[in-house]
Image (cartoon, rainbow, N blue to C red; front, top):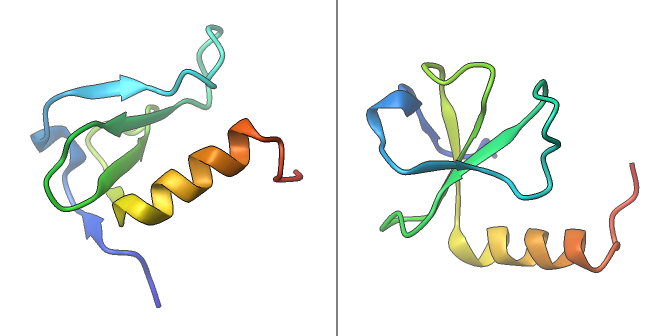
Length: 73
């Protein structure tokens, strides 16, 4: 099943770059905190494009796994 999307991510305010994204630009992940129905995630290179909308519990589990080094490339 595909994740729900927000077709025009730029319509949302409050985007912030992930603390795990590098400062050299390029491939950066941006999220909106405190969105009422989940966690919107977009690619910073396409701010006017779509964003994926993840359920908050799933996003929290993902962030914990990243911080703990439990994911491999």
